[in-house]
Length: 298
View: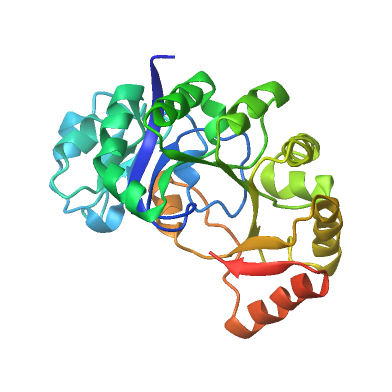
């Protein structure tokens, strides 16, 4: 594959695996989690994001739009008809205040690697490397494998940050090319998993079982959502699943609202989940401890 769709490359990250890392965010995901903090990652295509608070009302976008999809409202801010918009980026190109941006652009492996290689010295000195994230990175298929091979050729430590929903053989190829797999476990009950993410968890748990049986390096991560996957029954089921493989350490990603502005920018409804009060989160973490799971907040 010549190109993939990248929506962000974050340099000097300290939370996406060991050491200092460059995290490459690939667009496209088979899940549609109701709490997703990067909703722009779900659709593989480039998307227009509009930030109304940054709009000065200059009207440059209206003149630039070939679809005539933009009008000025009574507050002197531009509004976009999403039915007409094709995310061509013409409006974003002329916006002087970055109130309009296109999320996602086609990049070649060589273009991505030129960014990644800038921090090679930091990888060496910190025990870091490159993390592939999403969306779901395995949804990029051969492009992901080509990126991994390019990183392997440079001797970089490779992390795969995945939800695990990928055809089995393709997933095992990506897993085998990784030095560490950061595996999201969202819910152990397939019906509830489908309710909140759009898909069941059978394929996900099958892929997780396969890589654990092959003794790949895996770190379990749990995006913890109030009233969704923080129940005693779900945590117990998770602990029972992991116990035969000797996994007792899990990373917790507590519910947050960091992505709320992105929902507005995409014209989407805001997630209903709200962050945990400090004391409530402490009580929830005790449920993991009671089930023999040691937690770390990331």
